Length: 297
Length: 222
Image (tube, rainbow over all chains, first blue to last red; front, side):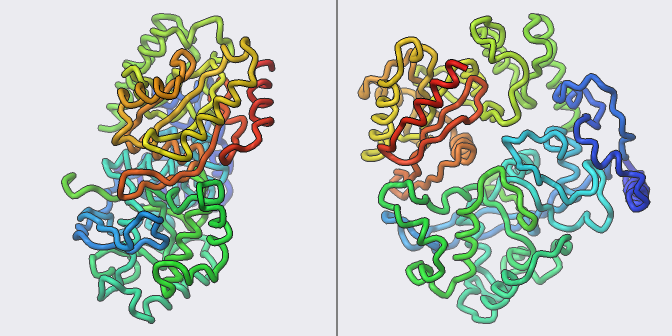
């Protein structure tokens, strides 16, 4: 275990000189010679690739206690109140990193890039990782992206946690560094929108680089988009009763005038983005963080 | 510790499969609990000669890869893989639904009405409730009776909130609970082949079902 770091460096060096290419593209063979991996892939062939050292254990992200508060849904339904009470819960201070997700796929072979079932992730799952089980030092502290909702959920379960609900996420995301409702601060809104308008970098910056918000939570804006457990409630498109115009409403910018808060164009963009997702989709700038109920302490 | 537990779990799981010589190449899903495996063996669904399509590992795109557990209207617990081997027509509903769900069931019955007796015997009609709080097995049983659903062919399933969310996300159904406990939801009828792969989806209420019927017929007769 202690040699994980050296292994990382060696493999990174191998990949720089092109020696790691065979390992990188070998998706068909279970690279992990454990009982579980062998049984799962039903592979009769012995593993060909030399396994990298298992990385050193990585701690789970610190949980931040978030007090009970209010969330104003972007599009409250016909029977819904304009303000939803979000009970107190805990949210991870930063998004899940590549290093943490690497530890997860080491532990759960079925979530490795070469073994994940097509039901659970599209073809671009973890595609930016240079290898299935080894990552260069430079990527370790960056948030993991290119993961599906299923994979995010599986990680959360493995960690003994869960994904945050949409209302929980938006409630925390509404805070600025100094106020619980940052969206009343024009500066704060402008910063988020400026980020939305910038192209996505190939490798996101490490997590926790910007100041925390008033709760002590980092990177709700400015780094990546994040999955929430109930992403598929971002509502009901054309086929639903009485909502036949909603498709048009979702994607026509002028409709944000009819939303809960016309100033909150950033939340409107998140709403539109979520409603375009399917659970197996992977996106280059879409990651996640975990949450827990308060009583899970 | 996690790895150790998992490995131990596998040893427990894999042994009985070899002992009964039941498709030794068919490894159970990772994380399947021992009692699920027993269930599959008890009803013979992994060994029956009547369902040749159910042999071997599940295809990667099969929704039966979901590991959630469901309880039917008779109170019996199921892994989704239990439904392997029959053609399945599935929809998500909730029994308190006054408008859309009765119409989904009417649409399903309309599809049912177009099938020949021989074909009908090969189709399972699966209603998955999205209301995990209220639609307990007894409620589903009463609902089946009220709607004259023959439970030899119709199965109504209750799952916990997490299983329901996962199923909704997998089938592509968008739904939202309102404060009264009712649901806004998209309406979708899904045709699954014998291995649980989605072959066709019909969107909307009262939509033309020609393609749905053709899809069912094609799977039965292929």
